[in-house]
Image 1 (spheres, rainbow, N blue to C red):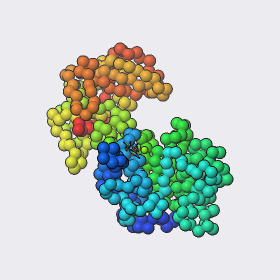
Image 2: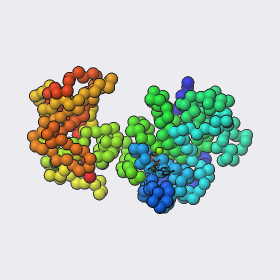
Image 3: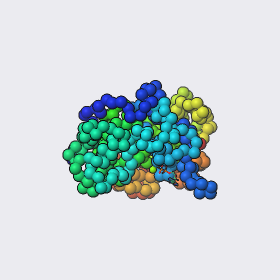
Image 4: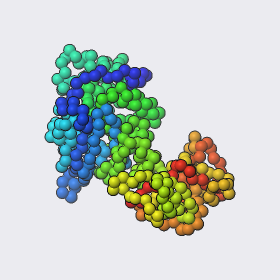
Length: 404
Ligand code: ADP
Ligand code: MG
């Protein structure tokens, strides 16, 4: 099966949405959007005071656990739900009260939502007809969209004659056919098996490169998809935007323990700041001295200072397990060990000098067992639980995360 084409740029075109041609305005603006479902006692606030801007040509991933409000944000922009308050804009145009079909947005959902009785070409042409594209032009536009997703030869098939991955390509082609200035994707790979998801992810990255002017909002609960595709990631939690920044900043300097955990999994060790010099800190994890990066505080963010309680964030693959007593290491004991193929996941109990106070945001530390640290070791590590080892924190891979 040929893939989504990245070699050829999408032909330049007039954006389907008037007003989006003002290039200084963000392609997408959510302005204090609140959405509720139901009434009275049955009211659920699915999205609360949500603010986000996506620039022309930018891809932003909305990342968060199930039920955090991601799809609701996307539906508010597409026009499938109406905000209780706030507004959504495309370019300079306020579209809050516009019917979905008039917004000129391409939408791709997890379930493909193809019309089962229509052939592939008619599915792709559907949006073009409702956008009143001249009949004579429709055939070429359908061919162009199918070509972009590597499905040029499949126009005559019915959806049921295609695999899941192929159906999702058709759904993407249908969204692209209207040449939207804004493309919304809601967990487009979630229904596919792991291997296909991986190859489709690469193809979506290629598609993104082929659409340099298109703003994309990509909803996912999968951090690897967000990291692979997004210029920026907006982390959602409990119907609100928790953090938004470039993927790299969120990964390297997580502004909150929630984002540190959700984006890639991290050890969050309760610690006390000993001293700070510039962006370098010495902290104490139960009496064990560890050096960490102290990110420059943003406006409104915590200032690092001595005696402040915080989390030391360290990724499992950055921690090293050594022979006991080796230089620069601390004593630890293997609690559990699970082989996962290319890596072994080891949980260590590090012997601390002092008792460790828990920081009150969910991380718990058993004072008796010491601090538990998850480590990813490459290959199949056969050391048994109970084995005494040394543990080394990375000299450059620890970062402070605010406790609240
Ligand atoms: P996500 O896409 O992040 O999984 P959603 O935006 O779908 O989350 O849902 C956010 C919240 O709104 C959840 O608590 C969900 O149960 C609720 N919700 C979503 N759609 C509806 C609906 N049509 N009616 C009532 N509640 C809904
Ligand atoms: Mg959803």
